[in-house]
Image (tube, rainbow, N blue to C red):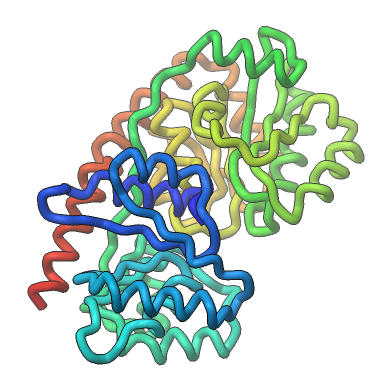
Length: 358
């Protein structure tokens, strides 16, 4: 669905920035529409919900197949496992569009049946886009032909610096003091994000730094367990679970330090948004995060699972304003130089042209 998650944001950025004199995109959504529909419609892009209700929904599959036959697209670009499967199965052998899929994660959760399906559908795939080098390497190990793999990093738009009025409102809404120091996390509350490590780190940090508070933005199956953990650690009065927020990007820009402790990722949208906003990042030391953060220059790494290290690094950052200012400048510069929307869109355009010519 077109919610505010990272993958949906990337799709929306791509569709709305494709050159209109060359491309005319239509966005079909397997399930239902969401907040990003409005952004797409403002740019004159059609959005079509297929209303999939179950994992394997023959009715939604029929709608997709009919849509492809009616529209006759030159390129069919699918995103994520379900769409990648539905899209490739729906195309006819005769007069088929060029098929491009996006692989955005290291999908360790796939069972043998799903892996077999992926291998079987490679014959219907013209190109596989990966958003990080680690995802490229993962797909090579799964025998995706090298000449079909393409690395196109995600992109982030420039984010305005902290707005004092917005920060005051956020603090008031959370019932925090006006001079509060804010550490935050944004993302799905799932086991892979290891938010429990961050909560452990925060309960140590609050003993090292006065007036520090923790914002957790996002929702997911781990929320109840994490809320209970803050109670067990006697820090629930210093932590706010804000749920899924459409203004998460704004909240990130109002933080003093951003934390991300995932055990695996494709590319972290929230880290990119924090860096684009000039917010110092402390992240788990995993390969995808190293594709974004430059140690000591744009942020710092903590060993996976070591909440204590998050606390120690953050204490040093909070006591050194000049260090935070330097990190902010370098982070913004890195996002603007290496992860711009313009570069991401042009890479996709180039790939579309290549598969059409091929």
